[in-house]
Image 1: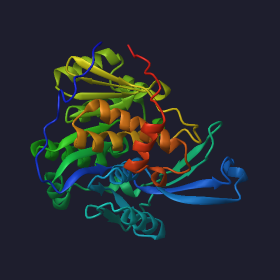
Image 2: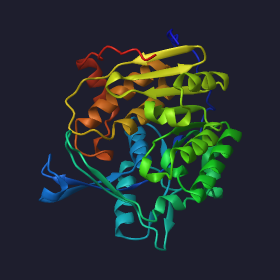
Image 3: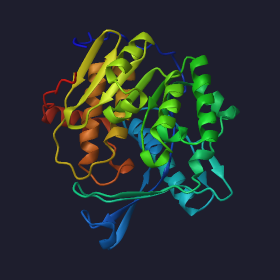
Image 4: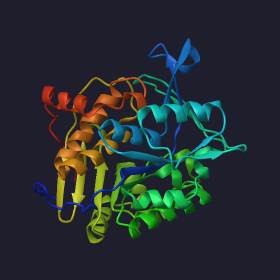
Length: 335
């Protein structure tokens, strides 16, 4: 798959004058970080709080990059849910599609250590509120008013939320709303990889842009080269995240590679959400895939250099400043 995409080649076509640049479907929760920075959870003197969850993180990444963004999720009717809701409002995320649970379902909680080595992240998701989402009329209307619908893999893990999420994807395809699927594989969420593969393949058929790392794409299809060919045949964009080796983007017979911006990393998580959010908003403004994935790479580098996830998402000025100060590390070709 050699070659390089020409500038402005293979552009996705968007409808003009829609209310939202993107709607995100996924988890919004409370994150706690052991303090001082570098502490193990058992040794923490106190905990810093933040909004978390891939859905919330991606939404905030896009909003800070200049996008008009709404979040489709559910929060519990309790102080934790209220904490998350309030901070999403402060960030300027449209919550008209946010749903509320009043039973035993609870907003999820994550405790994430801020350290590179031996970093443990514990997520409490017993009967999570975010999996109670419903594709109601408000959600359908919002989708018709959005350019993009971003699906995170966690919304597909249970039968009821999967059914509702797939309905949203079908509705988006019927209304010229581009669907992005972030595979976002978490092994503890799934009974086995065979089940995951079946679900991923069903969702992938309703997708315009597939995003994942090598492990995730190998669950979708054991041979990544075959997956690339399937995306080509389906006129889909495929974005392969490769960690310290950068990323590769495939569309048609062409391919782009981008390296990384080498900043000192404080923690190993949050980069994927920052990357995706900034790829989407940058692509919408530039219609240039190369610029988009390089912007995503810069955002990813910034996020892992800071504490937190949602609060660490950079604004566009910060990304542009990094790109002026640091030359992107040469790409490592994937084959």
